[in-house]
Image 1 (tube, rainbow, N blue to C red):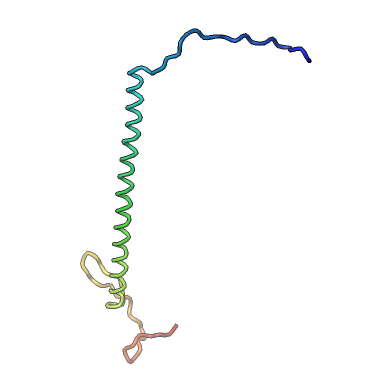
Image 2 (cartoon, rainbow, N blue to C red):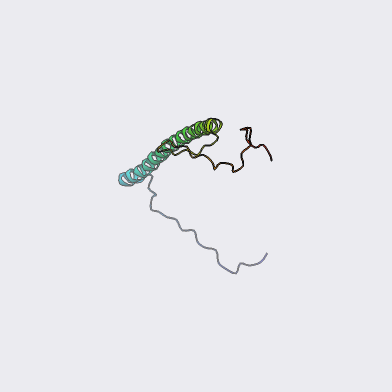
Length: 107
């Protein structure tokens, strides 16, 4: 068997006892930090829930607006309405309208 080139390290025995607990001050700091993280996570959860509710409500309102636009398109042949005055902005008239009053259905 080959000889070792480096001598074995001697085991160092630490006679100083290890502490079993952190100090009360350190424990209080740790608890405050963990509680702060937990409180913020709960608050973020509340905000995300509220955000989800608002996005759902927004989607419903957008659906209502789309339905209203379809109704306005059928009724007035336009959805271009001034939302402050209610004035209807009709599209420009066809310079050569059909004589029988029907709209031009050419593609």
